[in-house]
Image 1 (cartoon, one colour):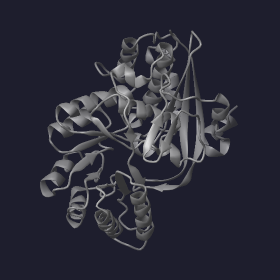
Image 2 (cartoon, helix red, strand yellow):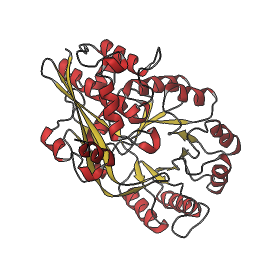
Image 3 (cartoon, rainbow, N blue to C red):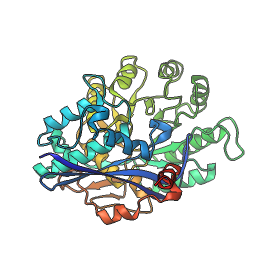
Image 4 (spheres, rainbow, N blue to C red):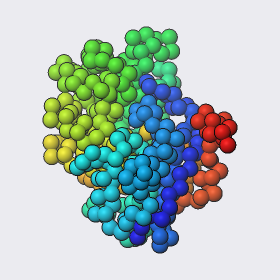
Length: 400
């Protein structure tokens, strides 16, 4: 079975309400859908979410990267005609692209690689009639999702915490990290919501975990440590308090505070994770297929983390239905991925496809082959971006 064609469609979907974190406020979400068709007529779908504030990608950079991989005069290879009849051949292909054992053909571009990988594995799964997780000896198990509350004023945040307690959520995550918010300065809003949310949870004796994610918002170790000391004993873990590049800062925070730490934006690759794990700087790692370049890299990290007793979480970057399905397959593929935050498709107004849904606190994933989702090409086309959505798009149209 060989790749016969690759189609790339930039689309826009809408969130039901703004999603506010320290680094960005999202109202609309931009994706690239990758459609791989094989010479025997099978079709695989993948999804890229170019989170430019994390990976530096855009819709058109994703499209151009994948097109480059089909132009031998630029990259020395072409995806068209590649044999994807076995998992070994697929792994070898992505090892070549990503540079696991040699120099990468194109550096970075993780969501482009993840989308392409998802589409190829989806087609391969349909070819062998198995869901992706079975390729890696994964087991079907409940996928319980953490509930994530974006940044709102204190009382609005606490109302949402109460709602999640009533819903019997297992883990509630509070987004934090904006220094001055709602007339409150110096992260006072964050301290207050964490303390008050902890009181609400403790009053129920429910055992709900409370975690917080700063999305780099504290910037440096000093501000992160000051925050940690003010919420001592309130959090089960704190995620990504400092800038992504400041990996050494995690160790300094651990030496000064008792709080457990999870790295997210600081881990884009196996070697990022290895550095933090070897330094004993983190307690958990949040893995994302869009940030790490797909399932294979995520599983490499999860395995090394397991060897060093560092549990992992599978997260998302406001992925749509296709991306969340790929993350769900990844979650089921490794036992060390203990936690899941992959229900972001339920935040979208539009539902692109079927085969995965959120039922209460659990992701329900079909057992159909490949990603386990069914996609209608007409739906994809109906969400294609318009000229007003992109200056690049307008520029290209004006030059015709």
